[in-house]
Length: 161
Image (cartoon, rainbow, N blue to C red; front, side):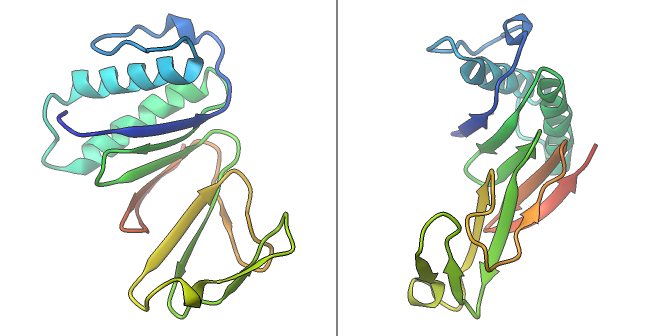
């Protein structure tokens, strides 16, 4: 589709070898690489050029992620340089911070980060993680099967099973 893509997968799939690959071939032999090549091939097969309405791509991506979730744990981050897609198979959480920025206390270390010292009033900072990273902020947990579409740090669309 003529875009640079970036991908991360957390989980384990079974039977992933049966996913038919088209145009893309994994460099290694992991379920993550195979799933990524399969996703890219399926998107390329369905959209030879980016669709005029991006929601058609988003809906299709959600369906593809659901197919991968049927094979096991498939928590995913995927970006095409314009949007970030997050898919939750078991557990993902997110938080969006904007002005006025405050302090965040890390959950696994005695450390506080004052975001007001590291941001401008125009910044929007979103973080996605398997588990909430701070204990004094309201993180949102994603629902299994949920796909979120992000742009400029904010949720643009939500697809649920």
